Image (cartoon, rainbow, N blue to C red; front, side, top):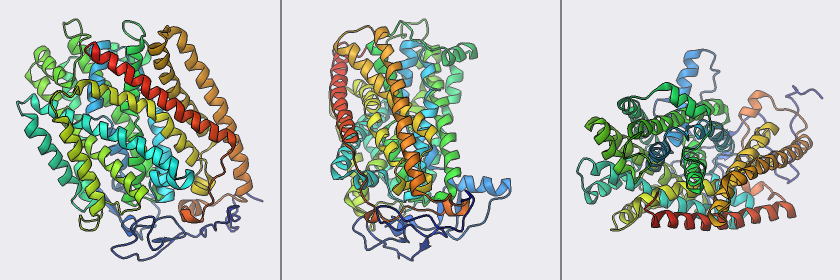
Length: 582
């Protein structure tokens, strides 16, 4: 049978769930209210899992609109550019949003304490960002539902609750770091935290509760644009391209490798690639009404955002490294506020003010994104309406969750005596420790033929994703070994190579088995138009994936590892707290 045959229909699923006809989804008029969630009256899109009318309709982006009935081919560069401008948003926001207050603090700490020697870690994160978020792009566009709901439905309520529980704890702590950033940034200008933190909380609530996705996205893109203030900031430090290039290309750690340096490296990974990103971008794509037809444009959005994020991080590290080199500030990072005043002392008032503005902007976009990812996830799990297209009256519970998280995090930050600097660094490291778990679920979902059909992962992508999980786990193991057993890091680094090699082998085996199952499930290759219109059927029609004993044991081992890793991280954070954070 020819691979190009499009007139044949694929065979029905073994689970008994009927495939959507290859000709495309038929949209029903769900009305203004639509279905509220998992308990809604039925699909808004026939033959798909989309349940909320707010998630169907025109794509109303900050920079353009694509009508629901627009099915024309983008043949000219002008039409492609206009389409990209309309689609662009979720990828940029999720990437730049991860250069939040914790990110600014962590990158500044790396530059101040280790010079340019840790720059090499940042370009390596570009493929991690792109691979992870590209999988999320496909999941959002093809399934039409959020990440939390997929985990809950495909792996059971226990694992769904576990994953969302992890997310909630980490996100709440992260939102706290955003308000810590607001405090530090505006205190530079003499504004009391009793004024700055509540005002920031009210601003975030006001921006999100407009009842218009388009207005919200425009606010977010303004924050993205303000991120470029880091360019004039680095100019104040008079950087030299040669040493920066050397730091990017040549791996090393100034002063030698030790557990504190490994903790900071994990923090860099955690602040650049965080679990909340997976939940946010998938739900934001669904909320923006992006379908498989526009996946390539959203991929471009994600790639552009990843490069902007990493370049911004490199410039922040370089600013601190050049500003504090050969001075009494070198190796004495305290918190982001001290960095602002240090830059003022070393480079002048303009540098301190610019850094504070960059920190404030990062705090606001980070708080908005992280809080929204939590609200989206709660909406997925509890089956409540969760869309920025809805007014407050139509989405009271969704907006109430958002507002409660913002207010609670702001209130905790105002409590006297809270170790703000230590919390900021530890939260980023916690994100790095929890990321392997989130990535494992992401990888399993993207190999689920019932969920993604013709959009499942290719073998090479499984291998690359397996390497990423292995590296993240190995970094955490290095941290545990050096903290608990006081083993030389140089001896333990061999473990990194061994774990990565094992990850390649395991992911290759998983990928090969998936490909073999895929051939059995798919009698033919879908045409381009059929593939672009393929949507996941209603989740209720899909049989639960069968868990082998090996997979069950592996998942429990991963959870056990996470518990141990989090305990070890807490021990290390306590040690740093007793020694003043150095």
